[in-house]
Length: 231
Image (cartoon, rainbow, N blue to C red; front, side, top):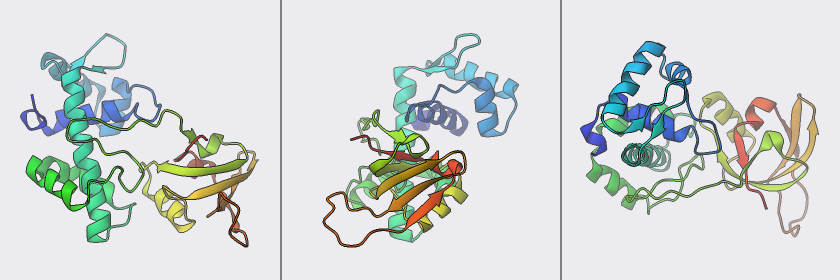
């Protein structure tokens, strides 16, 4: 079964179930799915029953749904579409990285497989989207970042930003203003309780560049959206 053979609602649920655990998160419960899609738990239950009947998830009473191999294949297909479209919108159409999520949510259902493959080739087969999320290949293979750490939990030291969650456009806009993007080198100077994290942006890991970056404060909400590499 291919992504185009199930409903858009089913595609969205499968993608959400898979994405919830990609960066070390917990499996989504029916209640969390209801909150995610702005619907009732009863409606979620009906969708999950249908997905179970199609062999795309396994339902166990009072436990989060689990994707089957076929369900994961469809989920990864939708993730690939979403992230390639986000990349295309930013790199080719001048969108900000805080503007593309909702656009891609709409376009991913309408785009053909041929269009997605052409976009992939046109962009030079990018490995990650503008937020640092890895783009699954046509075969569904996707890079894992099991060793990442949240900025909110990082001790003093130098790190590379590898991903910024796109859940909150306001956070994305703020982090862009201070230069916290995937690929940026930062130095965590101090954890000031629950108030802010003092970060130096644009750190030269080799220590060979003259001068030093200006420290900036990042609040806990923004710091919880930033994923760092663990050296």
